[in-house]
Figure 1 (tube, one colour):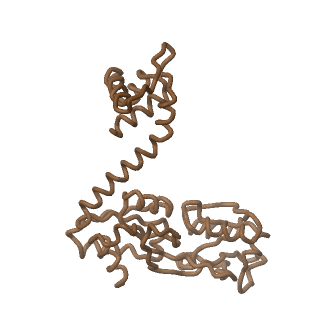
Figure 2 (tube, rainbow, N blue to C red):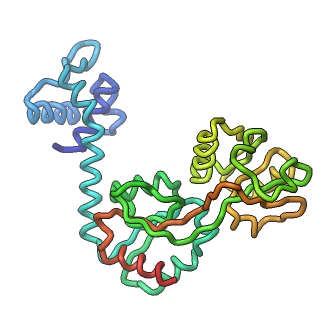
Figure 3 (cartoon, rainbow, N blue to C red):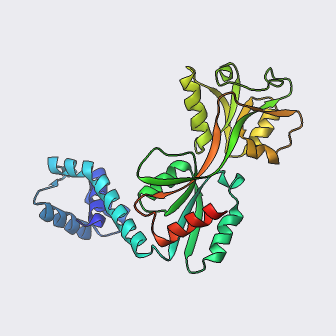
Length: 289
């Protein structure tokens, strides 16, 4: 089945009009109509009733529309996997989760690039969720992410780890404490990295395990911004200990959590591609560091 025609079918189905769909797809109505008839011939069914009011979907069209998105995604994944297989020796696409360069040196990736000139290496930053999805869909070959994924589809290896701490401003009731429990966070306002970061979801999960919904008054993509908001006494911030090394800690304390919570960085790839040359090489390179 031609996925290009399947995408055209989706637009006709949604617009209920050959002319509107053709305009959106930048093709002629005649050409689009021919493609829809070709799809009907292939499936041996009528997909639309042509009326003066427009294209009215049949039961077959409704079924096809429900399934078409998954068909297109599967075909795209197969195409990506074939490309990945053909370039398994000379191409490496790396996804780095937001914030990992606080612990994993960018220089390490640059050194790997320098030592492997025969490999075409590309790297970009994404959220944890996007990296895992792109690896599953063969759009990325290797990921550097925060937190372990309980999924046998992945091969994962711990790269680095540091404790998570609570950033507390002077004058706050927790300022002189030696440790803070999650249960105690119920009574205060929290500052957090946003939903693109592992730490946000882990904090929310642990608070819910303690039976309450955390009051997060502000979120950011920048740890330094959380420090500034904490100084302004808008709340206490939960951050990886490593980011406090770059902060002005005057009138602030980084208080450990009573329950162990570590910010862990993992290297990951698909279990199916772990032995591809380029992927194996970066894994070995990171382990040697």
